[in-house]
Image 1 (cartoon, rainbow, N blue to C red):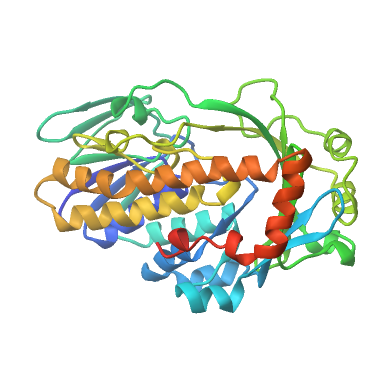
Image 2: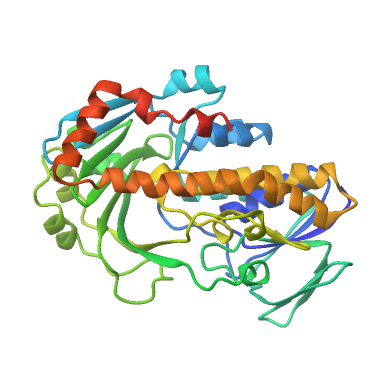
Length: 390
């Protein structure tokens, strides 16, 4: 695949696309608007569908050095602390889906992909390059940056996130929507917590109009905690890091039971962001137009309630590379093949994430029914074969 490809965005999706494309022989130039690479302090979950791709790129050993591999997922009622459902992970996931279930700090997966990109001769990384103008014709794409740099290539990959500039050149549908959900995030060394609050499993605490998820990251040495509540943030919704104080979250979750209550009170520093998304994709036209293609949050920003935002970006990257490798002489046709392969799966994940959020936050009799269903059906309800099989 002797193609010159521009990738806009140096986050997880952009780096994954760069690695996947370069492995197929493309020459990739990645444009990152920041003056240095970095990721905010948060964790993500990687299902077997994603771990399998990372391993296929030869990065399995690197993943095992920095990730955690929990043995199970527990769902608990936040108001009673009772366990209402368990999904085995660990060896059960490897046996069923051929790959592990991993939890990892965003900075660790970002560094893993960045190191891989830097080691490849076909990848050039350009910092301080924010996409401004974009033009395309039958021969290629031209990008003008806000720093007055001009780049030309055979195609442009928009991997510039939920507030994508590239998106308007594929589908001009305005800014993403603010969901009305707020995420309080914390990540800290497990040794900073009392021994009884440390954990090596994934735990989801469900309550009326809120939920909390905790899991180990960074080889299990750190704990990632995310509390999602209803509300609006003051200030620019584009900002990931708003002012947050521990007392506000403690007041919102005053009715939860130990050990969740103890965990919330043991953490003094939280970061706050407003969750934004778009409606589930409606057609392949939202993925690609001509020689421009969108991947990850630029195409399908989703709520985090299925833990697949980064996963779908990595799946996009792998599928894009395969589509271009299969039809290297006709770029627009290859991008349409990719778009038709991906849009329905991404739309399904978006829809299920929205539905999961509604289930997590149920109130009244519906909440009781949810807990009873989980108690009797357990792993059958919590497992998602259509997703993890890839």
